[in-house]
Image (tube, rainbow, N blue to C red):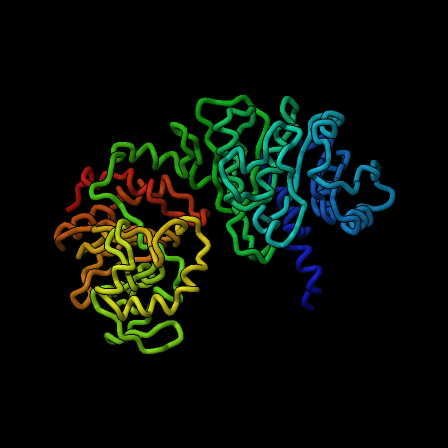
Length: 482
């Protein structure tokens, strides 16, 4: 049965993915087996307990612990109380409470030690909350002296779970405690970055991958993040495990020289390759109007998104590749073209009125859609402007890579039917004037040394895993290839 629309909206606003009982039990069993939580904690706290999966599991595996839970939903709290049983000692500690209104400093100060904090905070971002009209989020000002996590990190959008976990850790400072939370891997990574960057007194338990699709029906990389109160070391190494029961980590996340790296061993092994890429890595063209600027290319014939045949001046139309084309082996025969009204950022597309009147008429016919582009970068710019365009965009040969996919698959891209191929802004590329130079760069970029360098620095859970800054820091000239 599909949930009622109001229930689906409510779940979306609250990021309400209830923890399956089997997963809650597996988490506690893993933590006990690895010695990451005490066998007899004084308290188990679940700050957003939902229907109480972790509290019920703790009741079984940590029977001497006092159970303490809060949730904003009255129905969830009542469900948790029933699941725990009416005779449970300290049952009154399972209460209705809004995480963002609770004085966590006072709550935690009243708890005996050792404390185990377990949970599954909401899987929702501040932007999603705003779009759905939800108000279950932190205030701009709060009792830990911050103006919200966004202000502190410089991000306008952030995961609510990230703010919650950091808030709890600040309230737990100075206490004998362990925190273990299910969250998106990107949230865990940013929490680790905050702890290391701010030198907070918390040490690594580690990250254990979980199958978010199997457990929650969510398409996201997720993990169990474990954090313990320990002295801060010069370089804390956070082990990353492929699943809950794994005994051996596959890598260690660490803070090195002010930056979080994905694989410390690989990072150290490839330090000698750090430098500056020449030529410079470039992003593809940004236009934010695919239905207008991106055209279908079928045996030299152009059509718009609706299938209408177009007759545009060839000098402003270029074969186009997107990230998916690169990873799916479609680079040799582009199926799209891009209308490029500028050769540099200084160009005014209105010049096309005389140079390419048919293309200009097409843009005029779609002026309303182009004017509706939301990005602020188009403000105070000439009509029909695009970005990410310069002489490099029209280089005849390129080595390109997807910025979005979980693949390191560089591709040599030669001209197509005599025209230089361009990319959209999901791709990065190196421009070259000749084929031989492109082949040499590709061989270096596709080498085991370069792969190790990039894998040490790429976090695959990121929305755009491959970043220009990482690519640009690899000096390909230091790589020797056969």
